[in-house]
Amino acid sequence: MRDICIPIPHFEENQIAEVEVTINGKKQHFNFRVESFLWSLEKTEDGHHDTLDVSEKILSLKNMIETYDKNWELIQIFTPKSDAHFIQVLFRQRTYKEAAVSV
Image (cartoon, rainbow, N blue to C red; front, side):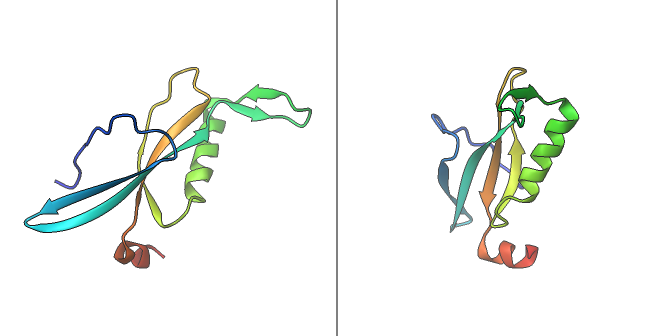
């Protein structure tokens, strides 16, 4: 088993949660961050907002994730409500060893 789901009450967007886990007597420390990305609207040249179609939303989200700080890895994308303007994405901070391997 690689993952454990831990509900964190009142965890707001763009906050960092620090989690310490002890496995076989060895403590490990993890940082998590929830980011909010624009999901439903795109600003046009005249300052108005247009609704994006699903494929445009997905391509936009994909680009935001691909260009995100490489010290953080994607863990989960939360399903937005149908009328949501933002989509929340959970990242975990890479350890020094993981960051060195992924570069």
